[in-house]
Every structure is written in structure tokens, then in C-alpha cells.
Image (tube, rainbow, N blue to C red; front, side, top):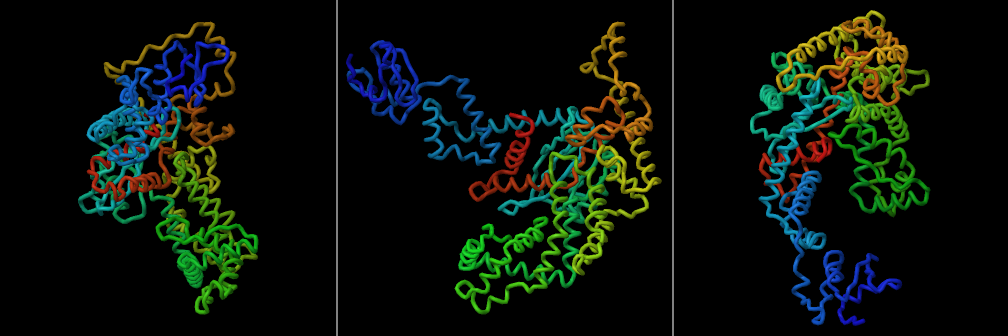
Length: 599
């Protein structure tokens, strides 16, 4: 058998079958009938790095023939192009990435027969995917019962201002959905009226009726507070509620507490100490050495940032963890100059820093819980604040003066900013949301009279939403005529009668007060959160379930919008800062929504 072709460098004849050959590189086997064509093609497609040497005159193949790209089907070409579009959208990559030499070389290796399309072609495909995804968003919102909004502003490298709007609602399967609606350049001044107008345009664009518009969650900026007031008086928004972001509000409570003297001086001293280690290479090297000597975990110090929630507590906690290595570095002349040794905190300040960190730690946990996108977190805001006040912020006998001062001020700030002592507090949307959360429905933080008012308010909301739902479903269009229900046989009705559990006795159509009564008596466990509970019990409390979808759609923080514009910074880096505003909108929209709606 002649083996003059160099392809035999990468193939061997199978020992027990002379009519088959095996690739040495990947162990794949092929039929062999005296021709090396199959082997040559395999090298070209599967191992192109070896194909350039696999050509001899005797095989009848020239080097040029082997280097020609094998054609691929139109279907395969579309699949690859769609994959590139998804890659650009999901990872927020610049479209001009496809024009790079490295990208083209990589594609030549992965699929030699594929020709990378022009930038215009990919941009056209991105636009088509944007339109398709937008239709999915419209359909999802159409099928929802209630929609809440978050919005925030961000600025590009070109100092262009953008406003991102997100929608939050509960799906038919009781999943919490968060979708980007629009990211649009704000060329006008950021007045309350301008923002309110923009929000109205976005809600109208997605055909969200006023009865579905529940709340707008925003930061504590004056223009956003006034914007919510303007929308609340607009008939098209049906009295929508303005919700101040719980994360921002908690941070304002913390800031006011830390501004007390001498607490503020301790925080400033800690900030200067951390800054010294951040700026001095020798100090950082010394810290590593002392950490190893003292067998302390080798963590770097953390600098607090005014715009980052909870960063002061994080800074103090890390500094306390590294207290003795830090002190050792500051007292070692090999790492610290004479004039820098006074940066160390005094014993009283170290004790105060520890008190501050311990008091603030549960509040950090509360903020993190409130910011989780997958939780219906507004319902938990007031109950968790009440637990915080009762169990953590309540003064105890052995509290230090610093701890007492911190606790007192935090309670005062939270009472004022959430209006916890307001005479109409039990009618607030926070309390109503807690009622439809089975974890907190007993409202242990209220007295009996206020609890009754809260339950009445929720039953009235359930009646109103049910009436609106019945009105909408009573006039189906020609395209949406409901299919007639099949009547059950006598046998099926008998089986239903025999199989029904206790829940069968608790059917009370048309009476929300009775639903609330039995709901409050229900002791069904809440194992996987309020939404999962309602998914299993919606049929038992149909009217109250409408109120639950309405109230649990409201996020406690504006974090979703803030995370989106943080990601948008990836789009607006220095290599792509000239993106047109409409393309920014498409990329932010696709990056967020494709992950939630599927490609």
C-alpha cells in the first residue's frame, strides 16, 4: 500500500479493518478505498492547522486546492451570523469587533467556509432581533395584570445623558419579570415635568393602560419625587404611587447617623488610614508581610465610596479584621515614615469603629435583600424594618455610648423617612404589600385597629381589580373568543366530590372580605417565597391573588435600572463612544431582555 501523501503523517490504517483509517489527532475513523480525499477534507475542516502540509503531487491535490474554503449551507451561514449577533448583544460588544483581523482569523479556524459579513449586515441583523424581541416584550406586558417602573439617569463618556426605564411585573406562572423598555438620550433639562412626560411616552409606546400602572420606584432626588407627584395626578396613570428606593433611603439614614460627632471623626480617620495603604506601595508590601507573620487572612483594605451603598461599614469591618497587621506596619520604620505613624487610630477610635460596624452590619444585609431582583421585596420592607428596630436597634443595658447614639439616630431616621408613625401609615402601599405576602400577613408590627384597616384596604383593592378584570374579559374581540368549557360528566363530578380536600370548602366567589379572612387563617407553609406560594394557592383566593400580583410587582429599590446603566458603561467605552443613541438603545435593550425572554 502506497503512502506517499503527507496526509499519512496524521492517519493510520485500522489494524483489524484495512478498509478503514483512523485520525491520530482525534481518533475519528473513515472508510478508505485507496484515495486520500476523505482524509484531506477531514484535516482541512477539523484540523486546519495541519492541512497546509497535507498535499502531494501524487494525490492529485495541489496546495491551492487544499487551501480553498469548503462551501457551507445557507442554513449554517445564518446560524453563525445569528450567533455573532447574539454574542454582540448579550456581551455588549462593539459591532466593529467583526472587522478586526483577530476575529476574522478565529472564524477562519472555526468555520473556514464562512465569510464574516460586513458591519452593515450585522447591524441590520441586530435591528431585526431588536424588533423581534420588542414584540416579545409587548406580548409579555400585555399578558400581565400590573406593571411597576424603575428609572434612572446615566452619563456616557461623551457627557451625553441617558434615561433607562425598566418594567416589573409578575407573569402568569408567578415569576417576577424585569424588562428594559427604553434607553433614550435626554437632551432636555432633567426637570420633573420632562421625566414624567418621557415615562408617559414609554408607557404609551408599550400600550400599558393606566389601570395597570402601579408604581414608579426612584431615588430620593427632588426632581424624581416631584415627577411621581405629577404622574399621580395624571388620569392616564390612575393615581400611580411614587416609591422611594429603599436602598437610597437606608443610605440616607446611615449618612445622617455617621455625621454625628465624634462618630464622623472616627470614620474620617479610618478613611485616611485606608487611603495611606492604597497610595503607598511600601505600605501595601508591609501589610502582606505582617499578615503572613501574624497568620491573618490576606485581604486588602477597602476604601469607602460616597456613591456606593454600605461602603462605610464594609471599610470599617475590613479595617477591624486587619487591625493588628495594620498597626504593625505603621509602627515599623522599614515601611512607615516618622510623620505617617500618627495615622493609626487611637484605642478609643478602634473601639468606636467596631461599634459602628456591628450596628450597621444588619442594615447592610437588609439593603442586599432589598436589592435582589428575583424577590418581591417591597412587601418585606416594613416588616424587616420593624424587626430591625425591635431586635437589633432596641437599646440594651451594656451598650456603649457610641452604640446607644447610633441606635437612637437610626430609629429616628427610619421613622421619619418611612413615616412609620404617620396616622395613616396602615393605609400605605408598603403595608398593603405586606398583607399579600404570606410571610408577613399577620402584621405583627401594627396594633389590632390598624391591622383591620390594612385588611379592609386590601380587600377593597382586590374588589376593584377583580371588577376591572371582569370588565376587560366580558367583551372579547372576534380574535379572542374564549373556547366553550366542556361540561363535566356525572362521574367526574362524583370524583371531584370525593377527592376534594379542606380547601374545597373555602370557595367564596365575589367576596374579597371572606377571602382575606380565610387567607389570614391559612397556615400553609411558605417554603420558596411569596410568589411560589401564590402560584400554588391562586385558585383558592382568586380575588386576593389579583391584589397580590398588583402589589408584589413593585420592587423595593431602583437597583435594576442602576445595574443596567452600569452595564451600559461597557457599551460606551473609549473604542465605541461614538455610538448613535438609537444603537445604544438597541444594545442595552437586547443585552438585558434576551437573557430573560430567550433568544
